[in-house]
Length: 380
Image 1 (cartoon, helix red, strand yellow):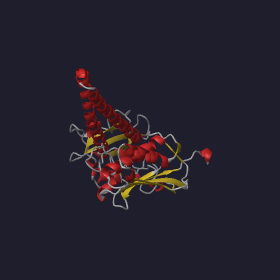
Image 2 (cartoon, one colour):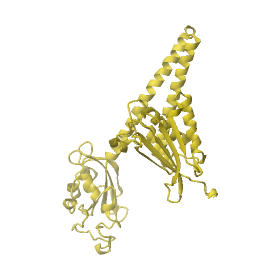
Image 3 (cartoon, rainbow, N blue to C red):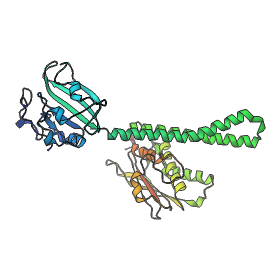
Image 4 (spheres, helix red, strand yellow):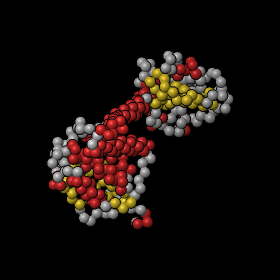
């Protein structure tokens, strides 16, 4: 265990239960094993000696618990603020105003310059009494930095993707307004069609950004209705054929009977559109779509619906498969924001489903998503 009892005087003061009555590994009388906490926890007694130094604190500070226990807090946990001032001398928790209840979370520096997020709570026997316990929590800043970097990358990517269509829209509209009479009707139509296509691209990018925001915040709403997923796939195939893809490039196989599926039709269309677009753009040969009944991903349901989209292209390298559903992953350099599969995963999981990627029998990529039937209770 990474906790221990300090021999500092006063460790068994009034209100602190005797060691025999505390849970194992709980010298500070916290009621739980501090090593089970996800954040670093350091507790000092009324004399400022460390009586608890949990496993997360060891990991974050690189200080061994056995070296910290019994030491003065400022020696066991030497912290400085970003201006180089010693934190414990600056805040003086054992002196100063007795009405203080703690310190809010802030960035501080460990020896060597590593940043940590530190907050403190002052535990007193009475509101303005002497300090009985100083409870310090530590959090590594690396996770926050990763989140900040991810947000910065998202902003940069979207800004880059928006610049091209908006430049095109601005250029064509300015040209038409300035020199309308000089262009033939066919030239005007071509320019307006380009503006229309670029406006659609901007709209799609904004929709992706909103979807990511909802997924990250857990606010993605699913409006369930009966969905004929076989027919939905068929509509997407017809759209590709109408756009010039050969009809024999697609093979749709629907197992009958299928369970009645209740899902958000617009969002399922979004999932199908993205998976089929990936197969057509990045894959080769025949794009095969299998729709089958399968075991539900939910424990309280027996039946679900599975859709497998596979192609005969080069497939996805084994070392990349664990990154396919992350932000900004691109299967090739043929454009795209790299956000589509991240959104697909968010939509499928919002339905209570699962999605996986693997290698198809023909050596191409194979995406499989499974949705629970999720019928309303009144139909059960």
